[in-house]
Length: 397
Ligand SMILES: *[C@@H]1O[C@H](CO)[C@@H](O)[C@H](O)[C@H]1NC(C)=O
Ligand SMILES: *[C@@H]1O[C@H](CO)[C@@H](O)[C@H](O)[C@H]1NC(C)=O
Ligand SMILES: *[C@@H]1O[C@H](CO)[C@@H](O)[C@H](O)[C@H]1NC(C)=O
Ligand SMILES: *[C@@H]1O[C@H](CO)[C@@H](O)[C@H](O)[C@H]1NC(C)=O
Image (cartoon, rainbow, N blue to C red; front, side, top):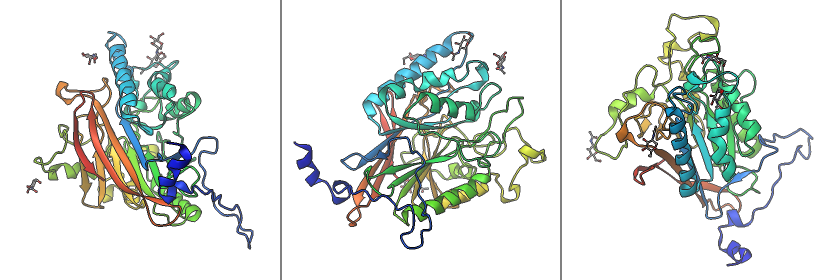
């Protein structure tokens, strides 16, 4: 079928594709209007012509383990094989690396970021858009989240990973940013915002533990960015999905409420200190400047962040890795935010044979709103896909 004939069959929101470049100034007052374009040199990302947008998540790859006995290189080759197979079989529109790309404890100062080159090679070759969050193992004596972000920016033209503006993210946590996805590249406003947050953790260059929660400064930044989006695009019915490596503190209590007779996926990692955002290596009494606990009174140091997340318009879910033995999705009853664990993808990192390896997929489908140009997300489905071919725990978000 010819492309032009095919276009007629598409709903109006894709077929018209009218470019509505936002005016830079108010036509009467001359006051500059907000233009939000965080990736001026990159291609705008958009849904497919069939109205779908599929995200495949690689979590906890843990490259670089066991350099002495050679097993690490076998694990890394296995993880690379897994990535290539999923990129081919899943054919994603966007890939997320949800933290712990490297087991930084084993890296050397002079070449630690070369692991990023290895990890990203299949993505660079396939020319698929992607971005990363970073985990506690990515902040170690010889590697930092910022090192990994800068390396990605340098070697991977299709990476959308970026660092937050100065003052946002706290010590060890620069990886806070968002990526707009348009229903069509020519649309005036995005249909979907992907948010990425930095839950820090690990240690700094001198070996002192870093806080393992999203810094309170990120809460204000979320509100400010949301206000800018509203100013630039109006209150469009844009959807959102969020990623953070370590599960928010509030998720710990959710585990006790899970119903094991429904199709949860694995639930093998009991959540507690260190497996949710809070206090790894830092006691409540520690008030040294950079590690000063915040909001202990509210019960969790990530409370400002969690509250800000709950205010993101049309947030379908926030997705975390870190606990390799958990795969479930559940709604956190306190603020009503839907949460999902990833599937452990890496052959590195702690493991049990029966857990297997795989990915979480998220499929967004658009529907026309009736407006001639804008589309909104009608359906969001997520499921675990194992390397063995098995699929499980399919749910709508
Ligand atoms: C690598 O993958 C192969 C095939 O799945 C598996 O048999 C082997 O145990 C894996 N090796 C390591 C070190 O993970
Ligand atoms: C960091 O890298 C240096 C230089 O290669 C190496 O001597 C040191 O053992 C590494 N430190 C750690 C904690 O891995
Ligand atoms: C870093 O250098 C060491 C020592 O030469 C080497 O064994 C290791 O494979 C290198 N790491 C990477 C990621 O290239
Ligand atoms: C658990 O889910 C099953 C199947 O949906 C349902 O029949 C059962 O009532 C649920 N149990 C609880 C305690 O909610």
